[in-house]
Length: 167
Length: 284
Image (tube, rainbow over all chains, first blue to last red; front, top):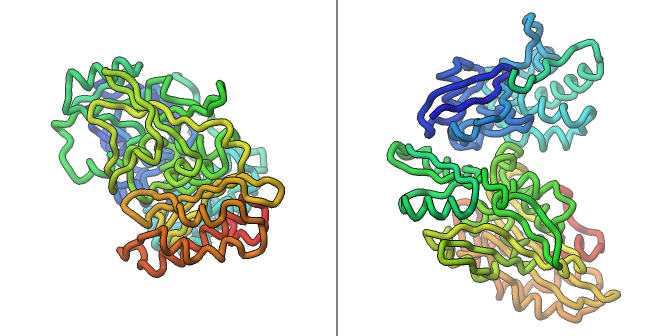
């Protein structure tokens, strides 16, 4: 089955079995291995991607679920010049990355939150990240990283990569 | 695997008739988990999420009509649905799950822990089921017959959920307890709908999940509260009736005794919330 979608601002066309999950398309067909599989059951959030701007578990979506949609993965955050996104910088600054396995999913959920709310409260952060589990950090530094990200994003000098429709 | 995505209910029913072993799928947040442990190579899925008429929340003709493929996230954020239903939807899973899951899926999965189920029961919701032989409208209280067992026939699709607009005259609330704050299956959940006449209870409906094989109404408790005047700790005084109404079990998530305690607190908090009496417990 031919599936066409937009991935990190670029058109993507794949020919796959419809039973292939989104996470498998992203990792194995498109070679975007930043997105991780933690549980395969939609519980840990390591596989979080943004689908039309909303966080979803890519391990619970079959190929046809991507048709015509816009997908953002962790690889899409940095500028084309390789400059890290402010959220990525914030996570590194705050020491919120230990083994790093949960981090891509955490960052995608963070981006989805900060795309909607410029100044989230701690409770709003906890809610937004409630579908992302971390076994290393104890979450404190991750919360700080989200707050740090919010501050950084208020500085308008970083140009966020724009997702272009169909181009 | 074969995958179909019909664009109308009629097409979906025709596909099912042509391929009886086809499985209807919507958000996939329950089915994909089940399939993650099996081979799906020889399965056929009929995806309902491209059927426009199954999506959306509409008011009109004295009814609120919710399409079964409406996302749980949209229900949680909607100002048009009664509070208890929005709160129940918000309690489901995680943001990721809510962005994929549908209310129809939560209903048809028929788990006694389903967080939209007690709200639907107290709101006297009706479910519209459609097959190639026609439509039927079933009261939500009659839909669930056992853990993950419903009266939905193999060839039927749940298309809409109907709540009469008159329910808006009352106030409703939902609460659940789980072992953690997010991404958790309810140990006990409950919803309440109340119609007050000044300070007297004109009508009250109470439903709990995870305390029986299906979500249940607490009928003796309701009867006790009917006609009573609001006063402090009125909900707490229902303890004995609640014990009679509920038959929880001890399982991996909670003991029977603890479930009674949780149910009592849920009754207190949802009652005070809906009746505006303060003392609603933690805002979570």
